[in-house]
View 1: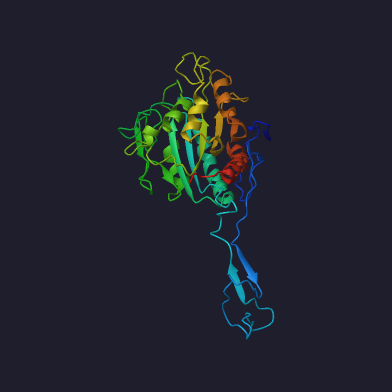
View 2: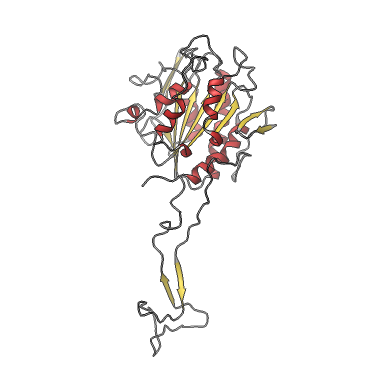
Length: 347
């Protein structure tokens, strides 16, 4: 059973099979700031013999200068009275691009949760592609909850996108990606490349910092030329952050879930990364909430719940301990779709 409350907190209690649907998947349909979607028109009109001296008829004319029809029912004069489509009717509203940032906890207890994410991703991205036909560009990046030592040399700091992995005695290089960046795009086979990026292993620090890593990943310094996240975050795209962590309240205050952690700047930092436009951000948190049987302390994480809830109708809280993430992802497609439709790119 899938339940959604007014804060878009989502959980399910059965391992239902996730079916990605083509139209309006999911039960989450509200947006914190809905707008009417303007329809596109081409501005074309018809005239049947205007006497306006400013109108220059084309085609055959009779002795009086009135346009003549070659047969009954013809429309001999068609005037293009509108400007470029979308200039005056709001067609420019709506996103054409989405940046997906997956924040994957790589601590020792996360093997099963990583597999659940991998199992649900193909249906999620397929549902997005089928439902958001206005979008033609995707960026998909992965970071971990610590400074990932198995990553590409020079990009092992907190928040650096994962392109290379090392776990136990094995290693794997992800890419090169089709667009040449350190992230996958719609030009790649996303269901095929995502497992390399997101199965980040379980050798990471037990003191997880998923939100701190998110903020670090969105830092303009990492997006600068030569930076480890260069080109990932775009001004003309909406941002979808997916956090997957079982991080319970910790006894060490370097942990994001520790009760004494200063969380006051978390929300503002993420919004600032998108130029202050909170309406362009969706945050999905698979975190310790309600069903907490899979984390070591059997406890919720108030800090993480508060962070996701701060995004209002565009924040989705779900349990990381659920057996199947598919229904949660399915329910968020409508939220992402509404966010995309309401997006107004600058310029």
